Image 1 (spheres, one colour):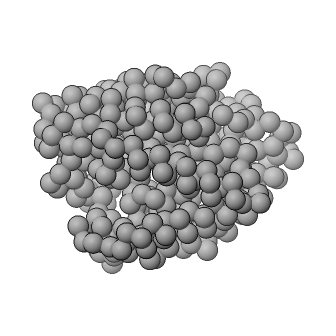
Image 2: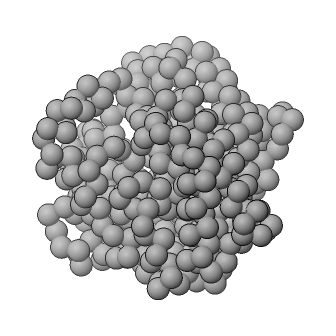
Length: 386
């Protein structure tokens, strides 16, 4: 995994805006409706080509395929794994429930055409990775399309969900308890994790379970209970990636990629020591939004393990403000000072820009303006830090 040797490298958290035609097809498929499969495949290819080119044009060093081939960052596994069916009833995030006026203000957004993550399929039989063909095609197509571009990424990554977020959002209606379910998912996901790493991609594990579930499925339970849940999920992840060297894995942790009060978010300080237990080479963390931009301070007291990198969020993925490059540079300089080594700091986004098809808070043109601002801010910080 590349470090920021001589200049701050830029990356992002994974998902990027999908074109309207592709989103519409994903929504139809999620409802069990038929679509023209040839047109669907062409739309994915065109969208992937567009987001790769736009990342490169914006100066992104470490990029990906924008998750254009997936309906969302985790429910796509139902098409690659067996054992899922029916319908989950996912708890609504508590910070939304406690502000009914805000919920009413956002009602139009919640009713728009998008893939429904609150009612995803659940586990109704043994889960197993049944078919690797879609994974193989996604990896090969991403490599092929990226190779066609005149500009090149310094490195590429591919995302995959943690067993913990699948187990928490695609509920259990088969296994004896949560632990048995999450362990079965971890064993199944090894196929995807190891294949991605074997193809030369940095594997990014998407783990919102390690933060967001505090105010979702654990909203009515104690902090100690939640921390035990985090420990269990991290142990499951460590077993699933045991055959991959840590410096080829990065772990993204977030508090939920939605605009809301977020005043019930678990503090980073409470979970950071547990995150350090993950056998990964980098943490990808929120640090730009108003709820978490102060938390860089925790790295001064809770020092990162010597081999760990920090992809610090300098772009808020829930607002259409375009961050000023000086603001971005300031955030990077603070992170470098807190961690003690600018080479271990990379610039990133707080989360993805469209983690499920149809659910994006930021206009597409603004997304790319933010990416360009991140490059400019990283360049400013590099001049000061190196």
